[in-house]
Length: 73
Image (cartoon, rainbow, N blue to C red; front, top):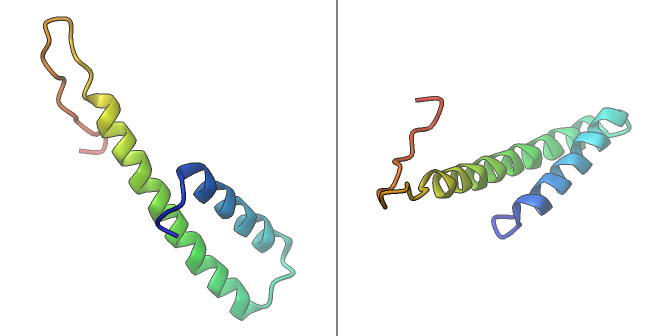
């Protein structure tokens, strides 16, 4: 699952959410699907954090890098 792109992870997450929202999933399967969904959320968050760090390293006009300062710090 770690090798998925952000878009693939998000698509799989949406499929799981739709399946669970329909309510046609037995409880044991729903628990398994929820576990998969949580793994996908973690993967998406990691990929977003990496992207934010990359974007935050923008070169200013004088050639200095802007340090990454996440909003939640």
